[in-house]
Image: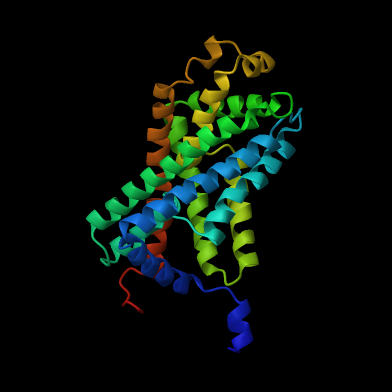
Length: 283
């Protein structure tokens, strides 16, 4: 193969598997402070995508499919920032399970990474919620942005536990497949296109991402405290009864578990069995 062909061709699936395994070891052994800061950045990046989505979904009229597609494309911003600008995202880090299955890292290292990244993502998302509130962002479009944020969060807390769990599975299967394709890419343009379709698909289809929900549900809770936004929305107090901290937790737990199953088992372990199980290490 020529040098040019090596540059333009994507890495093969087997090469990606070894790359993910090696990166998994690096991620699991990253020092505390860089890992925490990168995790907070990723939480903020996903929040930027959610903000863009909220604006795109403001006053969508009846163009349901087209609006969902547009919202999904806008939401992809957050994952593009993580892939290109750098960041440690809990859902994508579910692929570290491949390094654990290959016995390159311990279970303790795996769980430590997941826990710290999850905490950092949440912290980044919560800080962004406060900054968005302080910016007056929700007042845009004659409070239409706030209404869109309110409706988006309300739709999440009204899901049943089973719905939230299964939608979490679907979501992170797509997110981890996007991460896999990013690792297969050689250029920035490749990585952007690798992210756009899986991520816009999970958003358009209404699947659930735990880190995105750490921004979107609290943002909806903040919007519900603004009487003008509530008045414009036409939503009654009874209809918003689940938009509370307990409703937030009731959504986040099953969505997180679904994300772990979809990313670690359905994608990570499946690809491990195909490309790494029973094979000698190449690095």
